Image (tube, rainbow, N blue to C red; front, side, top):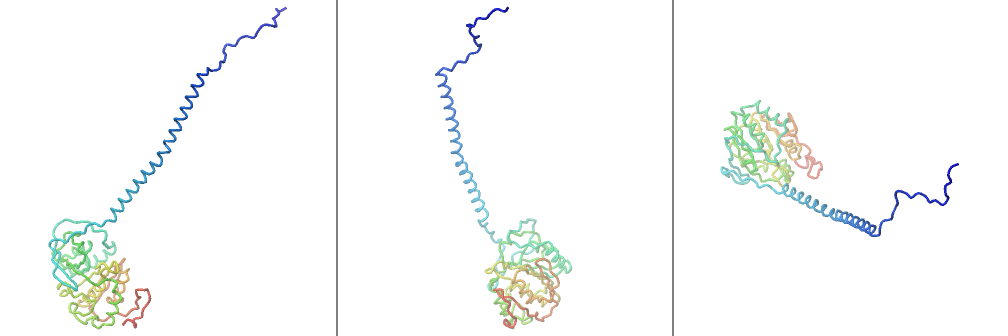
Length: 333
């Protein structure tokens, strides 16, 4: 039989005994945890406090950049002075001076932003006209970079350019033919007077075709102060792209279109090309004085009229008023 085990014997003592931490250790751990938590809170609080500062700095930088852009784009550039060789020779009502004649040199400059340059198809129409007639007599109201190219195409002919904006004389420096002359002129009639001038032209016999030579005309639309070469020459091609006529107070093209029509009638067969015919004044006065029935071609904002030397007046058309109403020719003529 197996040996008996006494009932009073105790259980075996475990190898690992759990003993609670001493009070000093517990307090130390709690203190460490409390300090760590407080440091984390301080860090979060500092980051949150810096966010508005960063936002303010970025906003300030953006505002400063915006102000700098506005100042840069809105401040007017100083206008270039007239070249020293400009001489003012004529007086009011229209003053003129011979500015450039056969400029020599290879220096060029970029056209200013305010120019209304021709499109490719518009320039192609003009250059083809010059090529068909060269060497010819070419008169241009308005100085644009493409027109200097036309003067080069017209080698052996005579080219005269009339311009009222002094800034363009220093912006366009290129080599042109010796037979090209550029004159500084001055226009004194603002575009806002176009309608009254049109009524005057219909009522006054002095504005009728063939009434008088242009330089002796009493018509209020006639440009009588142009250089003498303009009146003495029989023109083959006349281009009207000046003055600007960009706003009601700016000089309008009423006189230039009327004078071009008179010069064209004095020639044998003269083409007149008007630019910016999408604008009311250019369209009205072209129909009135160059005759709609003489319109032979158009490209973009260019209309080409062909005159065979006839002094027959154009057909009277209905024209809108400045308020948009249609006025019968009987009320104007």
